[in-house]
Length: 203
Image: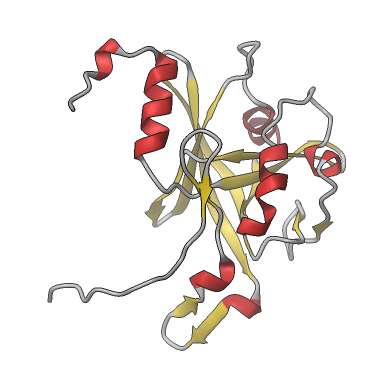
């Protein structure tokens, strides 16, 4: 089967892409909507794009009203965000925070999540996530006809729960299965990691 993307609507293209680009990591992004009022939303168009500088990128569509999502608006206004990697046990909470709330209403409070201070950073992190990135906004780039916003975030600090680290010799190694990261598939489906394996790279 060959599918000509030019024959698809934007909705059809989205559903096809999200079912074939699998699994995808999820950026669970905390931003500040006001003093101590935190927005939280998941994005599965998400990846690392550079090590020097250390950049993450996620893509956010607009609200149904056509306005930028609160995550994008807050990131532009404050210049900071915390990107979390959620464990599979948080799947229902992650999904709950995908709902569109009026600007200023906190998904953190609605989902009954707890935050804790992020050392030497202005924003807190989610207490239940084992990995969190304290980031400064690097760039926002509008793209496409929908449109989407590509949000580039420069990592200043990474929090890693010591319980999921295996080694601190030359390279820090994580026990990925202990992290149990939530993976995004298409539609309403998620996945978890079952096992890991290694393949030696050619010299």
